Image (cartoon, rainbow, N blue to C red; front, side):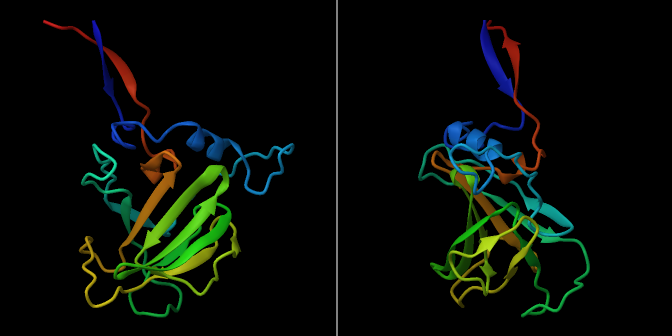
Length: 194
């Protein structure tokens, strides 16, 4: 008898489930800023766009450099309530406490990354910020806004105000929806050969 794996964790990393090693568990169990002897209760993760709807799911590549979609695409379904630098922008919120680790251009698109506890890094694109690298951010704090890339940039999302949320640890990319509790755990079912 063999085992068949069903559930939401398939494809979370390279080769169906890789990338969920100790880095993810330690990131969920540790509090950012806790010293080596100090423990803190982890804060629950929040969606980085208020009223967000997932318009494109994570699709893990079969090999480290293979094709896939290394994050989720989000759009807000709420009407804008704040004045933003550009019309039809969405505010990007910190999904958990962290520190701005990158804010700049990657190729033709602006990217903002946050380093969280447990060596977790979340990245948002296309996103612009006024916060300098090294800024501490709190969960739910506005950190960026959805903005345009350079003329050569072609968005893979057809919706206005769409932002890509990628999440990775030292093992690679995985779906950030797992941190929100929006993916069901895998279940092992008996598999009968023949």
